[in-house]
Amino acid sequence: MQPAEQLKKRVKEHLSSYTKITRVELEGPFVVIYAENPKEILNIPDAITNAAKTLKKKIIVLASKPLKDESSTKEFIRKLVPQKAEITDIKFVRETNEVYIIAKRTGYVVGKGGSNILEILKETGWRPIIIRAPTIKSTFLDTFYSILISGSVDRKKILRKMSARIYRSPIGGNRGLFLTFLGAAREVGRSAILVNTNESTVLLDSGISVGGKNPFPRFDHPAFRLDDLDAIVVTHAHLDHSGALPLLFKYGYRGPVYLTKPTRDLIMLLLYDYLNLSQKMGITPFFSWRDVVNLMNHMITLDYGETVDISPDIKLTLYNAGHILGSSLAHLNIESARYNILYTGDFRYRDTKLLDKAIRRFPRVEALIMECTYCGESDVLPSLKEAEDYLFSIIRETTERGGKVLIPALAVGRAQEIMLSMVDGFKRGELPDVPIYLDGMIYDSTAIHSAYPDYLSSYVRNRVFKEDKDPFTDPHFNFIGSPDERPDVTTGGPAVIIAPSGMLTGGPSVEYLRLMAPNESNSIVLVSYQAEGTLGRKIREGAKEIRVPNEEGELVTIKVKARVHVVEGFSAHADKVQLLTYLNTIEPRPHRVFLVHGEESKIRSFMPLAHKSISGMRFSSPHVGETFKLA
Ligand SMILES: [Zn+2]
Ligand SMILES: [Zn+2]
Image (cartoon, rainbow, N blue to C red):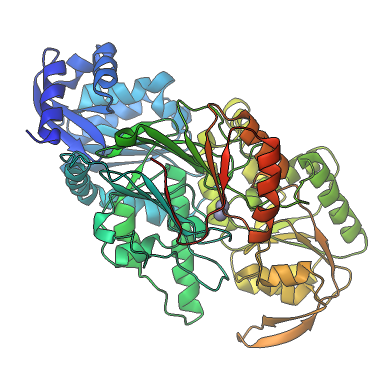
């Protein structure tokens, strides 16, 4: 009997004494039981928990068919959920028995420990899916959620097809366990690591290199074959980890992509923006919107700490990485090799206002693949307090002399981090009462942040859930709706402007730079990593003349007279000290460590330091294209 059939049979054996099970389906990595009367089994919570424990699977109980029609279900939900939840919409998908409930305060919809969700399922037979309406109105999110809801039927079909591949018969043998670095090795950008086991092939991240010579990972490597790929795991939304995903779909990949919900939403936003920008600039993008929708329908979202089978011999768990909203450390348990790999993606090992620091305790870890962006000799970041003090003093001095401050920042992560610091600065009276203008994608990205407070720091959660205050809606924040408003902002009174991109590689920050750099009263504050070859790097290194596109898109030379400051403490990456601390405190201790996602010179200086200060670990710094046998 095939493993899939065997699993279904075992689930039935475990659970049919509790209720009449009409059928058991495998949907992606999840086991779904369809019961005539789900109440019977859901009223004995231990039944499911025990079966899930024994079978080591996530089990979902659903009704074979709805018990109430749509209008009485709506009525039931409105009666059950307190008004405070502010439900904005309820939508039904008949083919899948799903009811989408969109609300401003989802906590009240979910109920204590999920009690309302359970109640809705038990009494109506509809499966509730809760979506948090952002506190900031976002047309992107409205469009995205409607595409998400209309794709429900397709996704269910795709999930069932995927499960046949996950639960296939193992072939046995012992080819071994291999890692191949397809990108981000002795460089920053195009992250992609291939894991080959006895039974399966998994890709960790699929990024592009922004501003680099080689934009894509080495997909031409002999170890990489699209047909053999069982799954892609994406640690976070930044394009250097996710940008090549649509390319793989364009070339025919139709397998699962595992990530967290906020990572899904942010990737959709970044790709949507990329396509819009390409169109505006008259560039033919390397993928289409169709590839993006295809990608979305193959995404399987996981919560932190949830373990699922992603192939016959690999279990995946995602943990908080503290880098940006939804960012994860990916833990792979490879059963055929009795081996565990932890891949950090990008991570930070200290708490900030926006996020709690990365997790450091795991059931088992033999090999660690660790990012090394800030592992250079002088990469010791100041504390967040020092960074804030420095930034606030620049803002005070600049506005006192009648100038304006430009902060080029990544739309995802850095912008929100600085927004939260500023809210505090205003509260403590350390910032002058000036408007903060936020431009470009920061608007929609902030809306996505406001939709997932559960993924943010305990500091934000306390404000949102206990004080009922959303720090992202502070009255100092003004969102720029159209490029026409930019000249007014730069010629008006004192102000702070936060705009993407962070490395001045494109986007509104470049236009602000053209308008603001020639004025010596202004300040430009660099708060992000500036990759080699970018305009940001040039300015950081003191360039006095730069070339930027004007309104017509023609390159013009401008003088940089504004003062340039570098404020480092806001980094979303672990610095040298944090990296060493992480290596010293991770539990259990891995015996192999691979250093990736760092400039060659920095990794070279970190290797001997790590050797000297950490015992019992073997360090490697792979080259692009290099393969390692782990077991
Ligand atoms: Zn990142
Ligand atoms: Zn990265």
